[in-house]
Length: 377
Image (cartoon, rainbow, N blue to C red):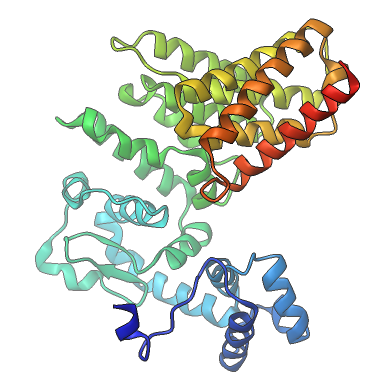
């Protein structure tokens, strides 16, 4: 198919443009005058280097930046101001559906339409340059980049949080709640909320309101996300409290709940606390427990070594000299766990298919173990 279409299509990797493609793309944006002020006023060659280095040669990242151009901003705002009053009666439908599309999550259209349906006879009035009527009867922004831009700049946080909480409650009361709870989990991921709300702090309000929805508060992974949000805002006591809550909720489940995600975050919390505040009495045992948890997670879920690796990278990248922080017996145990994890990562994640964090974790573990062996700790 590609061979037949090659004369008519230009195929490229949007996540990693070549230098030639970046140069061609830069010339095109120059001709349209769409660069934002800080990129328009610099030498083209320097701008190309910035796009490669600071934007990782990613077309999506560059497009998001282009939306800071005054011409584009004015056009989007004018269209949004025009269409917004028409969307008032289906505002929750529109916000939730657009949010799902911004985070690349496909939710059955009937769920969105059951949540808040509309007058299909008047569907044409919802169409604009930036808003699209989909064939499945749902309404959302035309694309994720426009949607994310409008979310961050023109939709009040209270409208977004209100729609998310109301959708969470709708799923809570839905006959198929158990099979649909995953949709709420996606909306209540801290990284997704922080991205859409363009804030590290605003998601805390969403989590606080959502915690009153029974199916949300009874989900251990909700409390993990709440803890992640607290950690991002340096609220350490709350972050630790929410991890403990996640364990308590998991224990209360009728069916056994695998706490591997809770364990991974609990380990991250223990390690990050030492990195942030320095080692104190009792931290040696905490670090040993954290590494034990990571080792246990890889045993139970070798397919999830990406998250374990990210924690290990955080630990081994830090300036902390762990062989000084740890007591002799704890250091011996941690080293033993490191050897086990290194062996499992080497076996389970071949270089050609592994994530960057897995490759880095494997390499850093290898160097640390070589250092320990040479130093005879």
